[in-house]
Amino acid sequence: MYDSINPEEALRFYKIASAVKDSLVGAGNIQTIQTLIAKEEARQKEVETAKAAYQNKFKAI
Image 1 (tube, rainbow, N blue to C red):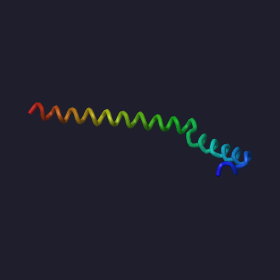
Image 2 (spheres, helix red, strand yellow; image 1 turned 90 degrees about the horizontal axis):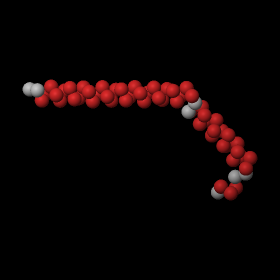
Image 3 (spheres, rainbow, N blue to C red; image 1 turned 180 degrees about the vertical axis):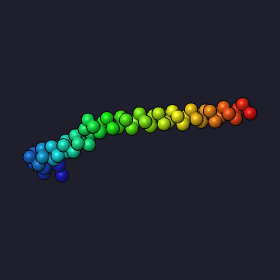
Image 4 (cartoon, one colour; image 1 turned 120 degrees about the vertical axis):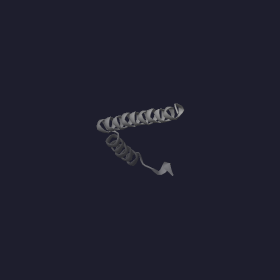
């Protein structure tokens, strides 16, 4: 199957794949992903803090 691919065609598809990858994971997208990760980590920490406070509230009773 792969033996029948000519080198020029393979190079063309490689360049297309590289361009698509670069556009999906460009500098702006990496920064956006990092921001989303930081926000999610902060949200998870907030949830854990609220959960601990809720549990401590009932331990005091």
